Length: 61
Length: 566
Image (tube, rainbow over all chains, first blue to last red; front, side):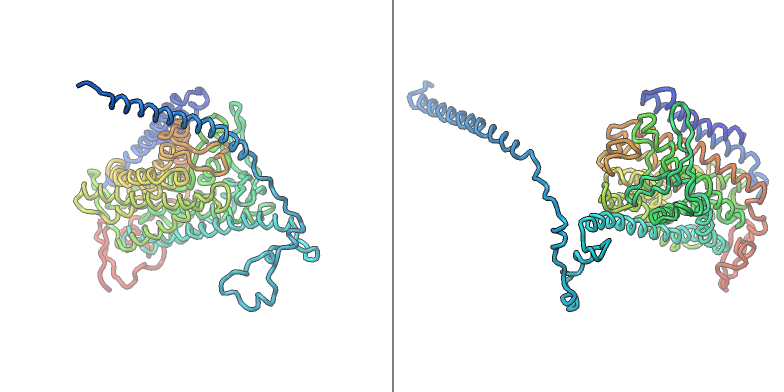
C-alpha cells in the first residue's frame, strides 16, 4: 500500500509533465496537469492509508 | 395652429446660426488638424543629448574644507562631487569615475536592501520558535525551543557545505546584485530536444570563484529562506521527535531536497524554463517561495509526521482525536506578530534590490503581504466563529500565517484586490485543512504546520496562476520570457498550467524524496523517542533540563501534563 502510494505520487508528476511533451494545446495540458495533481494527491492519501493500517492508537497507544 | 411669419424668421435665424457653427467647426478642424500634425511632427524628435565632457566634471564645484569645518546642520553641502571615489587622485575626477560611481551606487543600494530584508527573515526564526513552543505542552518547552534554535545552525551548515551550490550554482545573471557570474555551472540533461537544468555545481563551501561579494549577499538571503522551510518540520513533529533524528533530517533537507526544488524554480532549472522550452506562460513562477519554502517545508512535515506517528493519547482506539492544547497562547500570538513583521523582509526582499528593473514595486509587494495576512486572519476567525461559536485565538494566528504563506508566491505579481481574496481563502482553507489532516488522515500536527505551510503553500502557488494581473515589469521579462507574468483571470491559462506542474513536482517528487530520506533515518537512527520519555516530557530525557524548572509537571498517563506551582 505504501509503495503503491509513492508510485502514484510520482506517477502524477509524470502525467503532468508528459502533457507538455505530447500536446501543444493549453487546454489539454491543463486537463493533464489537473489529472496529474489529483493522482499525486491520491498517492499521498494511499501512502497514508498504509500507515494507518498499523497505527499505534489501534493498539491502545 | 397655423405658423406665422415670426416662426419662419426664427427658423431661418436658427439655420443661420447652425451654418455658422458648422463653418467654425470645419475651420477649426482644418486649421487645427494640420497644426496638430505639424506639432506632432515637431514633437517627435527627442531633445538632442548634451554630452558631458571631462572638463564639465572637473569644473563641478566642491565645498572647501573650511566650509565643511563650520558644520552642516541642514545637510546642504554634505555629499558632493568630492565624495566620488577617484580611480587616480593625481589625475582628479573623471567621467569614468562618475559613471562607475553610479553603477556601484545601484549595486550598493541593492546589497543593503537584500541584506537588511534577509536579517528580517532571520528574525522569523524567533517567531516560529514562539509559535511552536506556545502550541506545545509545557513539559516539552525546552526541546521545542531547542529544535527551533538549532535548526538555524544545522541548516546553515549543510547549506553552506552543499545546499547553496546545488540550488544556485548555475544562477548567474542576477543583475541586481552585480551579475553573480561566479555562479555559472548548472548540470543539465538533454531530453526530448530540451535542456533540463537539474542542479548547480558551483559554490560548495563558498570557496574559489564564489568567494565573491555578490555571492555572499545571495547566500545570506537564500540561507534564511531555507531555514524557514527547515523549521516548519519541527512544529509538525514536536513532542515526540528524537533530537538526533531532527538534526539529521534538517541537515538533509538543507543539503538535498530543498536546494533541488530551489534550483528548479529559482536557480535556472527546468521548472523555471517551462516558458522558454514549451512556450507556456513564463514557466513556473514563485516570487518569494510559497512553493520553494512553505510547500517544501509543509510537505516535508507531512512526510515526517506520517513516519513518526501521532503523540501518545492523541487518538482513541476508534480513531477519534483528543485535543492537546498548548501551554501559552500569548506566546503563540506574539510569535505570529514577529512572523508578520519578518514577512516584510520575506516578500519585498525577494526583488533582490530596490534600484532598477521594476524594483520600486517593493511598496506594492509589502502592501499585498500586509493585506493578505489580515484577510487570512479574517477567513479563519469567521470560519471558527461560525463553526464552533467562538473566535479561536490559535486558529486566528494560523489564519494570519496562512494568508502570509499564500501571498508569498504571487506577492510580486498581483494587485491588492487579488491579495485580499487569496488571503481570505487561505484563512478558511487552513481551518478546513487542519480538520482534514487531524480527523481524516489522522496525522498528528501539534501546530498545524502541514496545513499552514503545505496546503496554503500549494494554494499560493496556484493563486499566482490565477491572480497575476500582468502589470509588473521586472526588466521586461521573467524566466527568460518577455512581458509580464499574467494569470488565468487576466488572460493567460498557460501560467496556471505551469503552476499546476509546480504543485505536481512538489507533491510527486519533493514529498517522495523527503519521505524516503526520513524513512531511511527512521531505519538507521530511529525518529521517535521512547514512550516513557514522551510521557515524561522531552525536556529532561532529551535536553537534560526543564523549560520551566520552578513548576512541578505531573503527567496524567494519557499524555496530558498539568502544571503545579513549585
